[in-house]
Length: 133
Image (cartoon, rainbow, N blue to C red; front, side, top):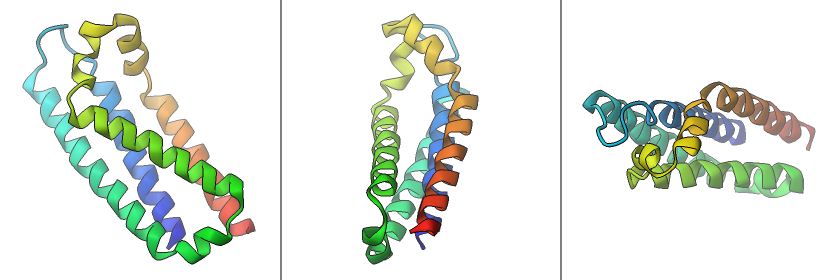
């Protein structure tokens, strides 16, 4: 069950990386409706996968307690980062980033492939550390 929790968190983080990359496209003051539709799709499904990840981690909390501190902290930090991005996504602050800071918007728009790589590394690390414990 704990591995399912990691996989659902992995899928949620992939959707959040996708949201970050598509939300920075467009002019500073006008956001195309297709981008908002894609962003809402990513927000809804990443929220669903985040909730499923929390449910499966709570179901297997006895196994989670037996894990080492490194595994627990890695999972919790990953969970918090995805949750913070979700909060910014639901508040639509992510879409206003090109008007607030162009440099930060440029950095965020290029996070999709590094986000995939980091998510794969975190997933493999958590699964490996969970199997070892």
